[in-house]
Length: 305
Image (cartoon, rainbow, N blue to C red; front, side, top):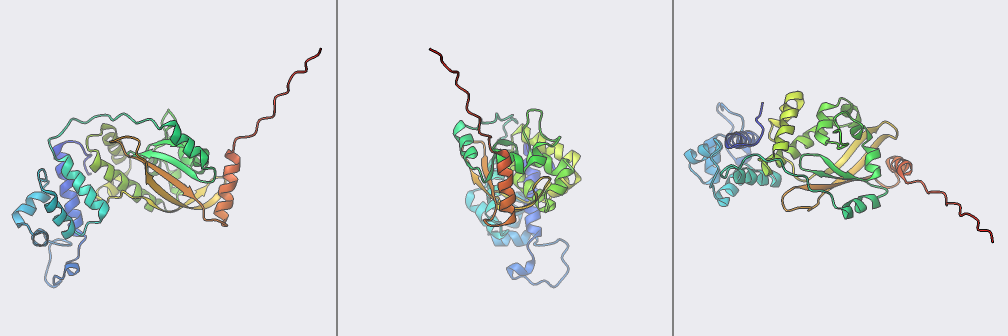
């Protein structure tokens, strides 16, 4: 099982496993190397990556063992190019390098409260399901339609006693999620990749470590996907849901950075339906159920003279 992020040893393990997993994904023919001959490892050899990055084999071996502290950005860029890292993976590598600096003790980050102006923004989106999440996948704020669309998650036993839903816990610890998400495996993969990015960005967050430890202990599927070291920072696409009341829904979603503080990551996620589709009709139906009911005017007492 992969370790949770936190101390320097764990950081070295993350660096080692991440670089080795990316190296294994590159076929020799992708960089013009002959494929004949017996290769003991999938993908590229360490010495081949070293040549591509313009460093010595000994130096790259030391890097892949996790000794990344003090490595220059130029060298990290060269390694990222040699391993054909995408933008999210490159960001993760740089986050790991920053985390390898002299370790701080794990801390329990205080959640930044969502300002009223953000809640007003969410509430104004009457035909879109919208919520704010933090990097640990906690739902920090939502509008009424988000509560209706994701009712199985909010009603789940994985939701905290304070009513705070966690996307990752619902995906991996509630069997209902397998039915609710039509593409459950893809949704799980995206969730793990987002958590992996957060672990690189905030390696000393104790609550994040506890969440990863909990999921690793209770979910074999999470352990398997966590060990793959896939990373995702940007999040958008199409989500297909089997809603218990509205039936099948196909919604597009887009996540946007929401800067609420200098450190903690917050993300605004908006789900909408393509116009003139059945999904839009069903979304409109859910919106009508959640709309506040107009109050009857209060009867004014008659004044007698």
